[in-house]
Image (tube, rainbow, N blue to C red; front, side, top):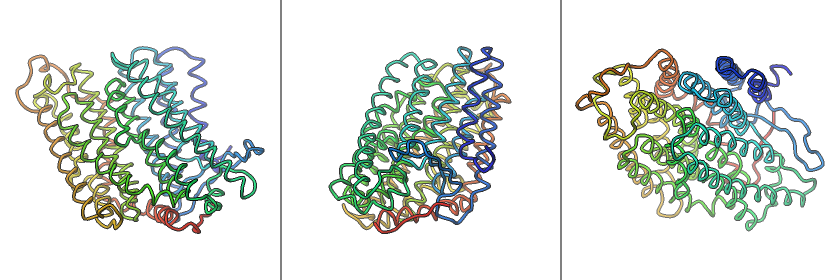
Length: 506
């Protein structure tokens, strides 16, 4: 295996890291193996990004091998402008989560690190898989380690939260499996059966409107639950509240993106007729999620629940951008997935940092921390401003593009001049919520119990600085990311509108 097999290496490296974890049981060795493995994975993802040819819409760095040839199932991986940035997002957040956890997790550290390496295989694999069966296996693989992370190292109600998480996501995954089987059977009507995405794109014109309607629904429910869209979001706040800090970072920063990515990679291009039929429903649910998530977050008393409900609103922008079916909206949606991962991952990191010191998450129990923690206040302030969409920071660009796409939307019901202003109202509500949270948390009288608590340590600063740099860079120079994303997004939009449009593998 060489650097030419870099996508396979991205799956192999975390798997190799599991071997010493099975051999050495001491915490120090587990800590070193986890940090080194995730750092190597991060470095490989950056090499992959450097090898990506900007400006090309087709799949690149493609690797293929027969897996179950009698069933038309292949090991087929590749990246395009939609997925190539999500892989470094995943590896960076995993590295940060592991580094931070190495200083705060005191029990079963070997199993903890093994769970994160297994989770990384699933997360990276989801973004590079180009075979529906391979995608499904990796999509399900993410469920197992996250179940363990919440169920073993979570809070007092972790069993309830893990069961709810598993029931919701497993139900969606099984619906997608039904859809995948239906696609496999339908592909046999045109020749040999296949689940390879490029081959399915070539024969999708043979899928009847009725077939597309129901199979799109099966896929959409799975992705809507994972995202999560309103009204399938209820598992998310409980999972976040009970998850350890590192689990929350990856749950919000990466796992939710698998839903939005699935819509763009599979649902829209494979089922264009059904996309048009379900379009009004998806637009309405997206705008409802934006307004509902922001409004409900405003009244939360728990910091983690507040950030979790804000994620529902931010992911509403993702689906809105996807389903307005224009380039500006879809580019904004992909950029929003990327930006939300960095910013909300950082917000959960900072909620965890203060919780490790104060052992409190209720806003009523906090306050005055800015007087004692100037470094923490400065970092958190930047991420709060980024989350509310301040110009010059990353989420402003993605939300602006989504709103631009929404205003240009000409479909029913009512059109962009109705849905655009409503979505913009969600930005205002989010700003109110985040500024109110920051004021309650950081200012006011200093509580006596918190006077002696130290500011951020070196490990915490080390974890926060990369997120800060990316947040500022993507806010000041978003064109670097847009140039990568736009060609592939234009291809997806054409696939969703033109049944005869096809792609190539390189």
